[in-house]
Every structure is written in structure tokens, then in C-alpha cells.
Length: 141
Image 1 (cartoon, rainbow, N blue to C red):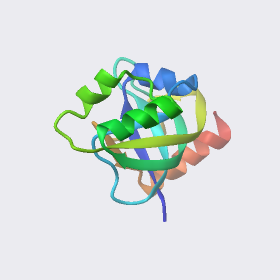
Image 2 (image 1 turned 180 degrees about the horizontal axis):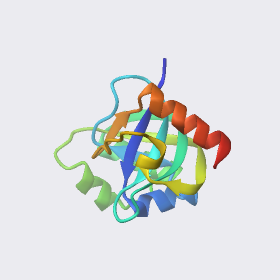
Image 3 (image 1 turned 90 degrees about the vertical axis):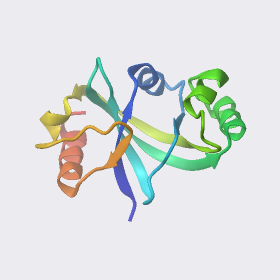
Image 4 (image 1 turned 180 degrees about the vertical axis):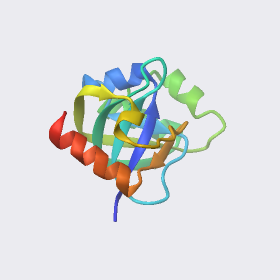
């Protein structure tokens, strides 16, 4: 059964995702279990949960292959930035985003989840966190 990830993204890239310019999120590593959506957390100085996005596809590619995806779908970064980010990795991941649902009132994680460890990269949401997220999406977008 697909899971939901809490994923940390720099605010510059969150803004690009929210305005539709960035449709691919790049990662040096990716989840081992199937994932169907991500909860987008903007790192400092914002430090808020900003949106939820469905995942259309996950690609494991070389830097060249990921750059082609970036050009086709909107990667939100330069080729040099992508190369720098993936330095030392023969392959990386391009997560093509589907529907992005923006939270009207971005939330501090602790206001949604009773205990919340913010990951450097990503982590799976617990069942309780998933329930809190669903409630938030239904009632307070």
C-alpha cells in the first residue's frame, strides 16, 4: 500500500513548486516503499508545511537523464546546480509531481502532529500523522 512522505525542501524550490514552474523534485536517494504523495515542508527560515503533492512518476536516472527530465517538465534549477547536488552519485531520482494542493494557512509541523521529527531529506508519516493531515486538508486548506 502506498505511503505518504514528509519531505524537506528549500523555500526557493517550494515557491517554484507552488507557482507551477517546478514539476520535478530531485533527490540523491528515495524511499524503498511505494509512495503516492508527499507533504512539502519548507526549511528555514520558513519552517512550515506548505502543500501536499501527488506523485505522478519516480525516475531513477543519470545526471544527464535527470537534466532531460528537468528540461521537459520544469526542474527549477540549472544544470550546474543539478550536477552539484548529485556530485558523487552515478544516479539520482526525479520525482515528477502530480496535483499540488497548497495549504492556505501553512502550518508549523507541531501544530499538526503531536510529535514531529523534521527529516533532513524525507520520512514516512505515521498513521496518526496521516489522520491529522487528512483532517487539515478537509477543514483548513
